[in-house]
Image 1 (cartoon, rainbow, N blue to C red):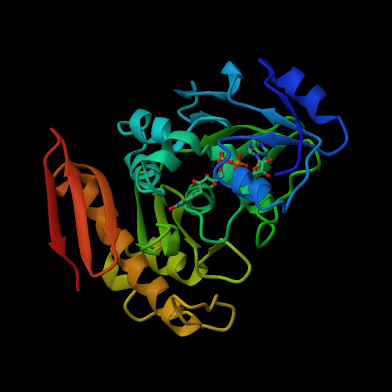
Image 2 (cartoon, rainbow, N blue to C red):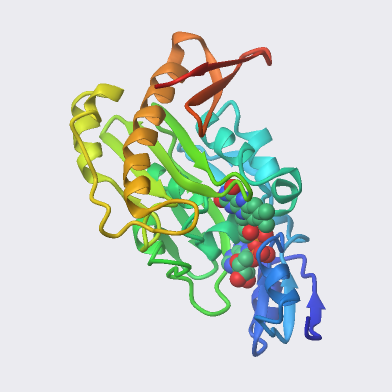
Length: 297
Ligand SMILES: Cc1cc2nc3c(=O)[nH]c(=O)nc-3n(C[C@H](O)[C@H](O)[C@H](O)COP(=O)(O)OP(=O)(O)OC[C@H]3O[C@@H](n4cnc5c(N)ncnc54)[C@H](O)[C@@H]3O)c2cc1C
């Protein structure tokens, strides 16, 4: 690690001022940035910690029914605080990494990093959320610009993310077993205006919408609607964990599971949270805290 200065401002205005220094960089939970510094892959002059900025912390419902999450809010806080308002998002946050990652990592850091296997990009694109920065408001479609690339300019901070609440939603992740990042993760959200399906972990160009599935699911919101579909492996990631063809296969499987979860969570048994893991196991946490698990073909 190279030497650097450290600032911990208390307001967004002071953070922007601190970031105006040449080579200064924002520090969220440090889950990605600190390992990068340890390996001497980055050499910031100053780290500007966002953890002391109260106006970037926490969750509230706006008057227009939009769920607002501060840019420096940890995954653990999201998992705990949106269970009633947006259970699918709470469930997604609750299955990021491990407890240490969830208690330090932040929504703003995750989105700014735009790792192609991260979970939040799928939730943000799938929900058609807005990203509020120190300079402007960005749609999810405008924000994500490819592998580890976003619309953020130098010194621009994500201060808040605004989620419209869908009628039904679920996130299904086939987790890479060591890191828990998504080998393929699918966020499905049904709004009155139609269904959105966002895929993470699969593509060489980062998070994307599967429009063919969106059309089919808008007509009939059921796992059966996915059955006749397929997705090409052309632009899928290929690595030691999975070939491109396997990822393409997983996109279809995990989309069907997310839809099934969304249907189920919408009321059949009163589920509050949903998740799914590899090996065909789905599980749900029920109102009152009980858990149920069952196999999905
Ligand atoms: C072992 C492990 C497992 C993980 N598993 C998962 C997983 O399953 N799913 C998943 O989605 N993620 C996973 N992550 C990623 C993790 O959840 C963090 O979200 C991510 O590492 C970055 O968030 P951070 O707050 O730690 O950001 P930092 O590491 O502090 O910063 C990352 C980048 O974002 C910038 N930045 C930080 N905050 C802001 C802001 N508010 N505005 C603008 N720029 C900002 C920084 O300057 C830096 O460039 C995992 C990480 C680890 C280490």
